[in-house]
Image (tube, rainbow, N blue to C red; front, side, top):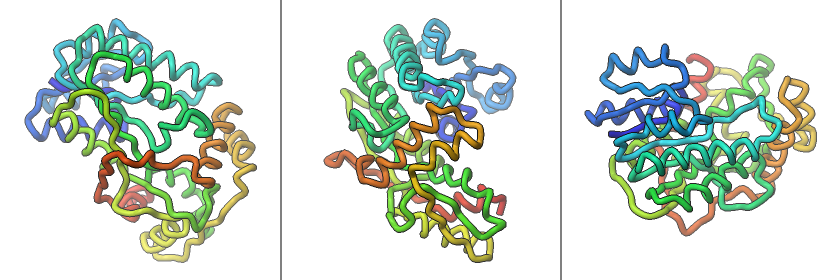
Length: 286
C-alpha cells in the first residue's frame, strides 16, 4: 500500500495516477472528502486528514509500505519557518506511529543550505526532522518549478515576461509532472537509509529562454523583462501577499541569482523529459 499526501495537487496527483496505472494499492490523503469520489472510482482508498492532525495522519499511514509527503505552502502564515517545522514534526510523528517503511519527501534544490534560501529553510528543517526518524527516507530535491512561470503570464498581451531572476542566467527547472513520476518510481522501488536525489528538467533555462519558448507558443514576440530583485517583496505585497512571504521570496530569488541556491553535488541527478515549452503551452491553454 502506498499513501499519497496532496493528491489534489500538481505533484501528488501524478504520483497517485502513476501508481494506480501500475496496479499498485494506493490510498490518497485529502482534507476534503468530497474530492475523493473520483479517486475512489479509480480504485484508490480515501483517507481524510490534515497535516496538522497527527492522529488522523497516523490512521491514514496505517499499513503503508511507502508514503509520499510534502509541505504545502500556507500563504496566510506570518511565521512560515515555525509553522512548517511544526507540520513536519506532526507528519514525522504520524509516520513513526504507523511504522511506514519508506518515505519519499518532496524537497528542493538548496535544501542543504542553513540560511539565505527563503521558504526553502522550512524544507531544510523538515529534512533534519525526517533524518532523525526510523523510516527510510528519500529526499527528492526538485529544481525551480516550471509551473511557477504561470505567475508571470499576466503581461503576455503586452509582449513581456516579467521576472526578478537574472534574465541571462540559466538555472535548473523541472515540470511538476516529472516530479510526480520520479516520486512514484522511488516509492515503487522502495528504499533504505537516508538519501537525497536531485531532480531537474532536460536542460537548464534562462528567463530569456523561457520567453523565447513562450513566444513560440503564442506566435508573437515575447521579451524577458528583468526587474530589480530588491523590489520583489514590495511588488508581491502590492499584489496581496503578506510581508513574511514577500521577504522570503525575495531572499530566495537573491539566493538563486547569486548562486547560493544550488545543487549540493555528489548526489544522483535525475532528469525529467518535459520541456518548458510544453508546460507553458498548458499554462496558456494552447
